[in-house]
Length: 322
Image 1 (cartoon, rainbow, N blue to C red):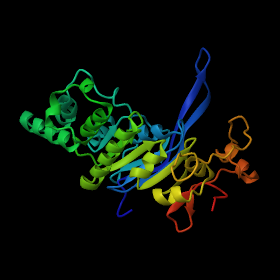
Image 2: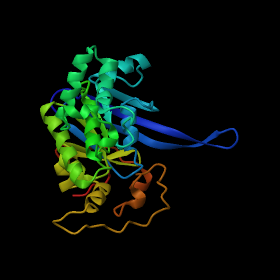
Image 3: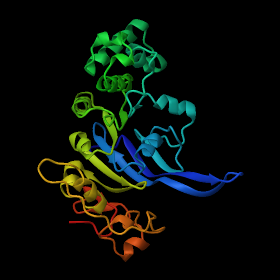
Image 4: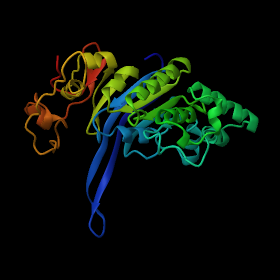
């Protein structure tokens, strides 16, 4: 990473209370995000990857301040936005945008494409109507839809075209960071490639920084410079994508890589170790119940995320592979 990071997350936590009974008393809490830390440089793409329910989307919502964290800090462009008042956070949203997972549900079916893309400009930018219309045509052309698409409604577009429309809307205010939450999971494979190539072009040509949320390692390998692997609300490994996939250091990362279908080798899925019913040791590693390499220390003491080897990789494991 060259220079100061555009986004720095430190020990971020989000715990949701579990309430029961007539009085809705708190009986437990779900640790959706439990101490996540990472930094993202300008013009780079970082991916949060992991199985469903591991906390990836909750991290995205916390960064965008759609929900408030239980503790921890979020610094954007060197400014702590963790507890910004609502009006100040609204001004920050020009530089923080999102592309939603479902291109069919994230667009208002009653508005034309031009209105959808122009709405952020109307809310945040002091452009005249003609200038706004010109900007909308430029944005639609940038994502490969063409200016004539401005008069169409969402139902007139395919799934891939709708996701491009979502990208155009996110780009309208020239944001410094775009959070893309599973942006291609609802698309056909051929359309996925087109959308990912477009995101790569935007990163290269427009200098857009992406935080990509995904469970698909093939998608991650295609676009991401750095990858962070999450499990049960924690980052268990983070490093350069190519190196992390070629030689995973955490057993969970190895499990994900081995389960990914590839043409050059058969899919290798190792049988899981005997489980304790899905419950993790209160003080131990959250992955210990599924880990074939777990030792007594893993059940008693939670590992911390620390640098390994030359420092380019961080792993939360007492006994990393390799």
